[in-house]
Image (cartoon, rainbow, N blue to C red):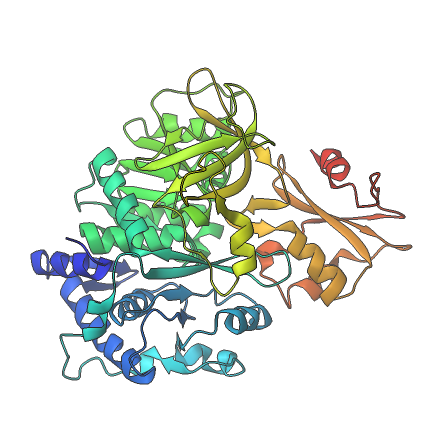
Length: 503
């Protein structure tokens, strides 16, 4: 019986102690070496925080082998890890720390000065002498059960502070079990890991490594800006499985790079996080005809993804790819405005029930209560569903199709962003203008900010102020001044009119 993911990892280490677990450039670490360092770190963590369990531990490191050691060390200590993006402005990191109140933050000497202003204990991972005698046991992990938190993932919040989504061990078991059964994963996967450490895709790759003995090949984030070099690394490292956000794949298609750098080793190609334009998808499908292509869908609150579609034939360029059917042991409800099930070809909100659901938002019961609600179709006993805010419909083919959003939440460059948060920061925190409205242009994949002001404000000034407090991916791409922003009958800014203006 599996109790937590560390139990699975220890079984993997027993079977494959000398197999490479993680590879980054010229650095490699075996499963046994990884276990030894993780356990050693876990004991330091437990000593530092007084043996507490089920308390978040933050990690402020770039994507590297030490990050994997940190995440596993935290898990061994009986606590959930919370990876933070080192490129995020420290003020925003401070907001996350203030909300979550982690017991400890693990970082390196390079970032020690950056985090010294934060209200949290700090442990410097590259100052630890891992060559010392290893304690091969950490008693704290034995207290962790499958419904305890495994990790926290921060996602954009409308009031300027990200929400910490709490995911447990069981939900990852469930997803990996489904993936193994549906796609015959067997531990021979060499995963080209391109997603940032703050993405749930990275956590999936960690679990594939721990549970299945699959290898993680860390691909530096900077490679996304040099797609030809990225493909060279994928080829040289014999990567056979990728799970990427479509943005970089679109770039590669537009540059026709696979013609020059064939990816013959790729067997499984997953993508999620945003819409993959069918024209560019078809390029990949034709260039790598023997690979299994899968379009997955699901917000962070549903542990990776809840629906999938295996593309088995070349789709029509004018037809969007479906998001498919529910993953095993996940139920999808498509509800209309009156919480009734929608008929075929009728649009409604996609809602999800099952063990894949997150436990809620950490230290944020109000937001949790809004997103995770009682199933309106079940009046007999407590049963939560997650309301995604995504509008979908089921076609006559039985497949689910994504139509859009019912609110201001978007997916941009693979990141989930509350447009309302951008507006809140500009108006209330930076006080650049009194009124503004951010909308998303799905055709050009750009965030457009409409603002109300007598005179034009230099876009450079907007960007200069914003990059101090938000990550670069949240900075609008286009700024448009209006004398007066349009209002609807109740006096609110007419977001729909502005949205239609750019799409």
